[in-house]
Each structure stands twice: as C-alpha cells, then as structure tokens.
Length: 353
Image (tube, rainbow, N blue to C red; front, side, top):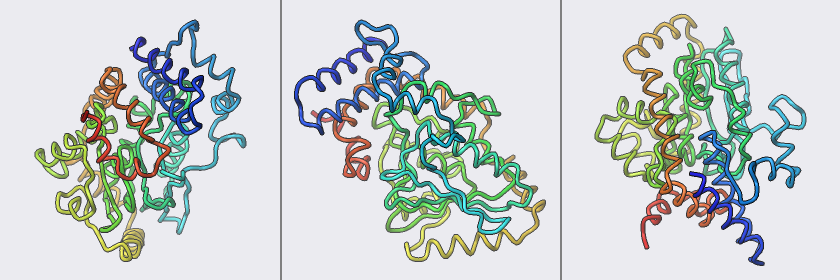
C-alpha cells in the first residue's frame, strides 16, 4: 500500500516540476489527491520520500488545506452549504443537493447531510422528504477524491456503529417518514446508493442515469447496493448492474425495478410533488407503522451493510484499484464534464491498451 502511494505521489511531484501546462499539472495534483483519498478511507497515512507525515507537510504548504481541516459544518468559515432544506410545509420537506459543477459527494458533505438526517429523525410533524438536485445533469455522484486525509479520517462513526456514510443511509431507510429520490441527471455511486436507501425512486425518462460504476475501477461499492439491489431487482439484474458497472437510463431502471417509475422529464416534478403532498396529508402513526412493517420484510441488516463497507475498504488498498483511479484522474475525473457524464464509457476503456 505505502509503496504504491509513494509512487503516485512521486508521479504528481514530477509533473509539477516538469514545466507541464497548467491543465496537466492540475491533473497531476488530482493523482496525488487520489492517493491521499485511498489512505483516508483506510486510515493509513500516505508516505513521501523524506517525510514521515505527508498530510502534515501538505497542510503546512497549503493554507487552503489547513483551513478545510480546521472548520466545522456549523462554523461560519466552513464551505458553502451543499445540502439545502426547503420546508414546503411542516410535513413536507425538499432536500436539495447543490454542489456544482458535478454534485460530487465528499467529507464536507457528510456532516451537512447528517444534520439533515438527524432533523428528519427528530421532527414530529414531518411525514415526507423529497431529495432532488439544483445542478443540471447531476443528481448526486461519486465520492470526492481530492480532500486532505484528515477530512475523512476525522469523522466519527454514526449511531449505528457504521462509518458515517452507510450509517446515514441506514438511518434514512429506517426513519419513520417517507423518503423519495427525484432523479434527474446522474445518480452515480453515492447518488445511486442514496436513491436505493430512499423508500421510493422516481426518475426522468430522458435525463436520469443510474450507475454503480465501482467495479469498473476495480473497487467494491461501499454504500450498500449489494444488499439493497437484489431485494429490488432480483439477483441476476443486481449482478448485471453491479458487475457491468454501466449506465442505466430511466426507462431501463423502471423496467428492472431500480426505480419505481420513470416519467417524461416535464411531468416528473408535478407527479412527485403531488404524490408527496398527498402522503403528507395522511396520519403520522399510520405512515410510520406501515413503513416499519414493510421494513421487516425488505431492509438489509446492519451486518450486511457493514460487510459491503469492509469489502470497499479492502478493495481500495489493492494496486489494481489505485492504478485505475489514477487513470481516471488523469483522464479528467472531477474536472472534465465529458468524463463525468460518460463515466460508464470511460471505466470500460481502463482495461484497454
């Protein structure tokens, strides 16, 4: 693990010294950050030649890195809100992801979403929550490969004992309210996993794309899709989605049961809003009891979710995964709209000469 991280760091450092154009140097920085991310999720510090603590060295050289490590979600100096809540009525909320340009989900998003999940769990008047996006073409995408080590390793486990990401998804599924994902644009990785953890999913026929892309990058998905997808679509289709690591459009997602229904894009918002408002008029206790009984028959156990997360942690330590992430970052992952929009295509190219 450490040898591979050192090699990636060296490649990035050589790129910055070689007089390459800014775009190439920027991609070199992302390669370094990918190594830091891999260390972050495993809890192991990356190493650099001549340094016993590369994260400390990086934070000393980069004031922006120092600042991001110090602030907290409630601090005025923290990053802009990436998750916004609109309380349309006391019983009906909209939760909107707004982190342009790609709605990438990272360590800074986790505390913000956790605040929302906690509020959902504790509001006695709330009955329905709809998750949507303010970013065109992207509902919610994959994990952010760029933040410093401390941004991920400093996060405590959630109330279930799981890492905070799967913890929030488990709690959302069990909350005594109705959760709906309104999917317009890409729901990739974490976005797909949030949608699967929601009680219902409604998608734009023309604009929704769902994807568990991880196997294409030699990773195992960590947010619970192996436990949730087979219950929704059956074993064969779950394996097709997970192992194919390809893009699933709204119509196919509906046919498979990945989403409840797909609609023409101009009808999606009207249907979801009307459905949410209808349910929001019903009795709280009847909603909570009915959902709880459905949960008995349909939700995976915490050990199933934990096994997926542990498999993800193991997968990110493998040299094969590190090499493929490096390739994607060099292609322009997180910087080039073409790569983000056609991620299924570009993961397929990683195994080609």
